[in-house]
Amino acid sequence: PDREVQMRYWKRVDTDDNIIAVESYSHGFDIEGAIEITKEEYDEFIASLPEPEPIPPTPDEARLTEIVANSPEVITMPEMWEAIRILARIHNIGGE
Image (cartoon, rainbow, N blue to C red; front, side, top):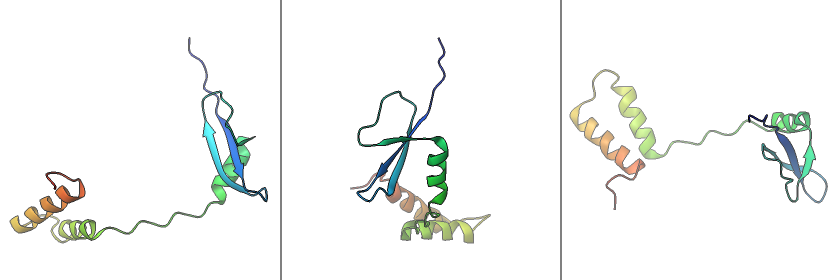
């Protein structure tokens, strides 16, 4: 039989009672060390978080982006081989 999944929301607090983390789960178990909260409290905490800083590209990712951006229609054979080597390094293909 189908059963509706009920989300439950939790917070963790520091020694000064400041919220340091919120969690949500669809299982019915209590979470050790956490305090159950409402969805509204959960959403409020998530909304208060700052926008994450973008992770800067690695040198390989930056070069690969440059190859593709500078050669939108035609990529030269040397650039193609360089791109393949970069992708192999990024994805650890055929590496040491």
